[in-house]
Image (tube, rainbow, N blue to C red):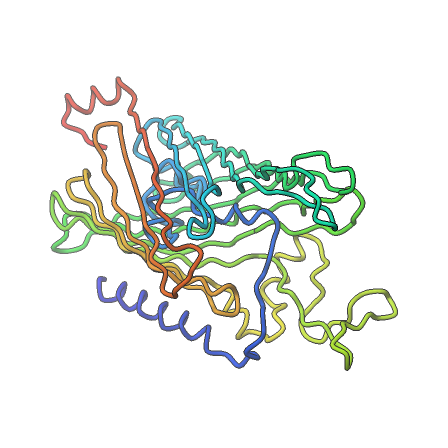
Length: 407
């Protein structure tokens, strides 16, 4: 079994590395952009220290972001977490993502959870076309969501989540700007599979699999006059995780996440001899390669699997890969490491992460640090912390203590 898992991770790395070996022009930019990209930022330090892995890892308070179906398998009665991520710290010092999340179990098979994420973009001075200052603003975005998770069998669970998204990029009344806050509503659907294995020579082991489609929602507009509406970052995430207890004190986990934006890929537009985009008789830009991105949300999700201008090879490049390892000693102290890979044609984010965690009684503390592979990466020096508080039902905990039971 361990040999098979090793081959799985090795093959995934080889395949993903081959995504970047394509024949696109050196100046080709196929980056997919969306509104409210803060929704893709890892809000918790545990996954932040594991290369943004989380769809099939052991459930915790921050499962809302990665796979809400995991809440049904969480081994605590209720809890909450508080986190903060300083963002782009090597460029500015006042941008960050704050989050708070809470969950509660309903019996053995059900769980509910809710979270709030607030993204501050710092102070920005707006000016008119002549350079006159119009006023300092503090753009911000936030989202609030809730989920219901349920076990359908001892090994399988599912969840649905609802989300409201608010994006206020110009939070002042500037008369010469026809802008307004953008809003959207979205939903997540997720499944989680947890199978306890009997492996010879290992006291306990499990294989897990998760699948999550997040932010299936309404397009967003920031103008009161424009009909242009932007997709929000609908994301497909899936992957396995393998965990084993080496002995009574040592536990190790290996995890793999594959993720892809379910948003249309920008096409390549035809240009004339003066390098100007050609406009067709219907008033639309003429597409040379690719497909029209001005489609509905559902069609955009389906189209995202086959609309890349350079075909299947480019579709593979749109899959991001994360791999990670996590080690726990006596369920008290952990160390983590991860790697994140994104094609150079789709954003070129490539970095290692390291992290650690402490658990004592009801209290938990996680931190992570990002190590960029390439120099001058705006994500370098990203250090984040998360506080966790987990509680058991007093009666349940007392009964387990008297009978020798454990969580």
